[in-house]
Length: 352
Image: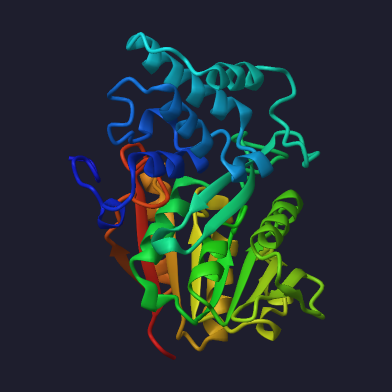
């Protein structure tokens, strides 16, 4: 049985089917994976259709920061097909919205000139707010895969939500932050003393900075002498940094002036064996900063078992200890646990 089949998570018990569908829509859960909770099992009248539109394509967040027009059109097409199969009368607004989504140029958010970029919104568990992220819908955009949130990042967030004490109030460094889902979630919900989100591709760093500012509009800028730190904000509880961190030049980063990490986190960074020497060097450097007292939480999509095993063996040879964690079911961040083999490891080293 796949996770959640026939099982209703405890935090969903008091939420209406409409609210649960809205959450999945806002973060662009693939249409085939949406759990409708009985919402489309009966003919929806006009008021019910209007309520569904208000909670999805006409949601205030979507109006301000639009989802991909392609995704919205697919969502509306599915609803129209379901209603048609019941011979239900379609709400005028439903058809108008669908036709509008098919119009040329709709893909671009009105306030965002960046071609191909749209937004996703993650409603966080336990009423902790919303994370809004600007992302690219393309598999590879501007020569990088870092402009969207991948399955392993969502699985990492699920893991974090179930292991609060391991992250709350810590000094956290994220490697390969991409558009920032995991790092922003940690900053928003776990009050780290400092969290530094890092990457090394210019377009990814630009999107990452935009997303941090978007989710912390009231945070105060902080001066920083390190030229690799392009953004440093103080939210009152947490210092948040965005850093250009090239693993090949980690020793020249002056990272120690900014943070002595208690925890390193990363998702989907173990996919290219040519990067392993630089990544291993980076981990050695960071663990030395903390006198081997930090730990590394790594989430991986196992695309090639040999590649992942090669990296794990390198860690063992370098005297790291590896503990594989149980992967939490997909509940809050709606990742496809049936299609992706996600593995999560906690990596440590004996004190020197």
